[in-house]
Length: 392
Image 1: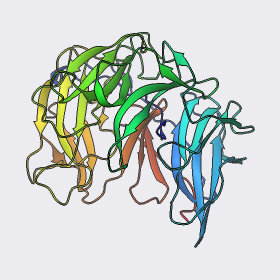
Image 2: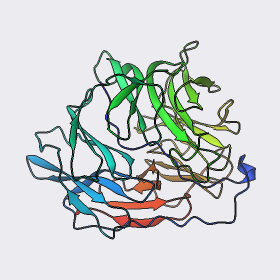
Image 3: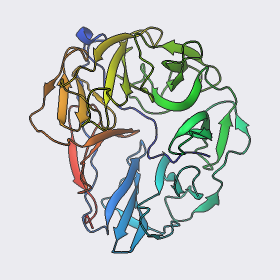
Image 4: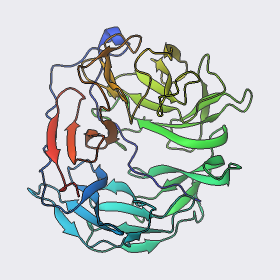
């Protein structure tokens, strides 16, 4: 019962400053990628991802009163415009909403999933930029010793919780970049409960691209088998082996820890989401932030939730930028730290501040209201804007 995935685990940032625990930044500035706008595309963007060469895919949903048509748009490498590709996804009727997911697996390669979780009703793979799609399986077949470069890790739910709303026990599965097949990872992390992907960071590479360095760290989150508290596991050999990475002072509640890093640096941040026990108006709560300067062998908790103190929530991935700052986008605004995550100040705007994901091309910000507004950045400092879809 493989969970649908909406992006590839990747990171593209420059280094942080020495005061934040990383190496001093270089002089070179990172020019943000240039993505063409395409307001003429029908519908709103339900999913989007990019490869390291600048090509990309977008899921579009054009909805009427009773039916939504699911489309696929493709940006070819070096193209000045997006193009609509043939979509294998069926129309959606009733009140299920958009149930498709997108995983970009490299230039011209992507996997589409469709259906409510768990499991997806079907998957389709393209290796030629959406010109042809091959139907695949939604269940893992066989195993793999490693996560191939360009591949993605996803969660495979083995047992749902009693309410049927989430996963109680799961394992990691790799999506192969050349076929889109699911393969169970032969060596699973030393974690219990709901084991989920938690990030991929190449700290010593020139960029943080997936597959950019043999030293790339893969992370998984789950429960410490000894204490039952939230914990991380780290692989330094693309999933062949794992070591436990405990987080200090974690409570029993909260799950799905995620790791972000700063390229050309040993600096890592871990983000622990969860529902705050004393904040009834927060849906995407932020419980704690942790910081490591030794490759996730040890962690320091630098920030802990306090009632009424922002950021109380986190949407998407925090931005660990080249200028040494850390920015969290939340339900009440965007919040920026210049002291390694120990304190934050508001960035000016209030209310939903959009959310950020990471792609092999850079940090990708999208607005919170489905209006088709996006920004992309290679370093978290310099951003370029673009717009997609007509919003209907």
